[in-house]
Image 1 (spheres, helix red, strand yellow):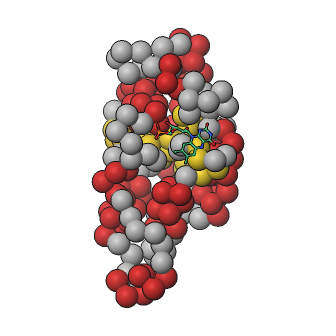
Image 2: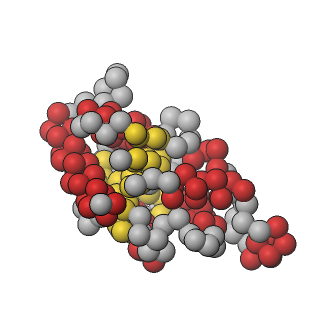
Length: 185
Ligand SMILES: Cc1cc2nc3c(=O)[nH]c(=O)nc-3n(C[C@H](O)[C@H](O)[C@H](O)COP(=O)(O)O)c2cc1C
């Protein structure tokens, strides 16, 4: 099974990248070896503009990212919360990729997670993120995981510092990979 983890932050010391890496460790420990954490900074895109699309088409970076996502059996999104909702860069990437035919989201299992230094752990943003992903036909897994106080959540090896948290996330990942396996069977 191929799992792509998509930390939707370009920031170098991104908390969502750290969450992605901690989840990749847990997945590998569960025997899922084909795990790829993508680098969102490598796929920077102009703001969606219908004139740009008409004259130049969908940018190559959007096509490359779409191909990477389409090639996964399941995708785990680590989405920052901006002002209580989805970040502009994530929504913009989704908007561009939704213009492709076939678009890469249709029927694809997605798990929504997010990390934030705040106590609510990006959960408000995950509810907003769910809407456009469902609108483009992604199979968004019902459970989500918001990691609060994420700046204190990881140990020196990049794993979860709190054992209870590690177990919670590991259980969620097991459920999501079982769900993904059912879709691909
Ligand atoms: C424009 C902007 C809006 C933000 N809004 C929120 C918010 O609504 N809730 C929250 O918990 N954190 C908010 N934050 C803080 C982010 O959670 C924090 O910067 C986090 O580190 C972003 O994720 P990253 O480290 O993966 O880039 C905001 C940050 C920015 C730059």
